[in-house]
Amino acid sequence: MEKIAVYPGTFDPVTYGHIHILKRAAKLFDKVIMAVAADNYKKTIFTAEERIGLIEACGLQGLNNVELDIFNGLLCDYLEKKGAVAIIRGLRAISDFEYEMQMGSLNRHLNNKVETVFLMADSEYSFISSSIIKNVAVLGGNIEQFVPDKVAEALREKKENRIFS
Ligand code: PNS
Image (cartoon, rainbow, N blue to C red; front, side, top):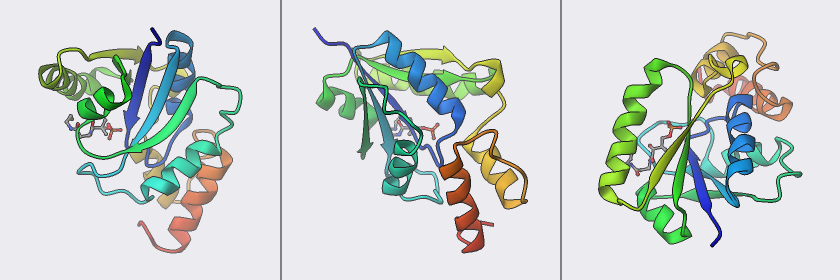
């Protein structure tokens, strides 16, 4: 039976850290669905469609077992619908642990067939988050080393159009 995993997140925007986790997950599962959360409680600067477009621009062409999707509602319901057995999450630091533990436990209580698989972020990416990148971008810092060119460009555009400040 095909083992499907879902790599969910807000991805507002996607970073090299996310792409690294995705590529590693794609080696472990038959199929990985990178799923952009459309309606979670976080205020985003990119629409779900824009976030998907930015992920598509990340050079994932060689990853034949990766799909991109947008999901609404509960993550565990989405996994059920997709016939997925695992949730992939990246762990950067101890500070991530509390939130991830809560989310992983909650998801297993909501659906006990679902396991969360944590991949430790590579040290090169352990300090990168979408929020910190947005913060550097808005202050005019160099973000090219942390995100693909298209993402850096999109962040500059949002800043110029005062979509975020
Ligand atoms: O990248 P993020 O913001 O840490 O991702 C969080 C996300 C989207 C995975 C989480 O908020 C989520 O699963 N949202 C969907 C709604 C849901 O299932 N909530 C209950 C589990 S937190």
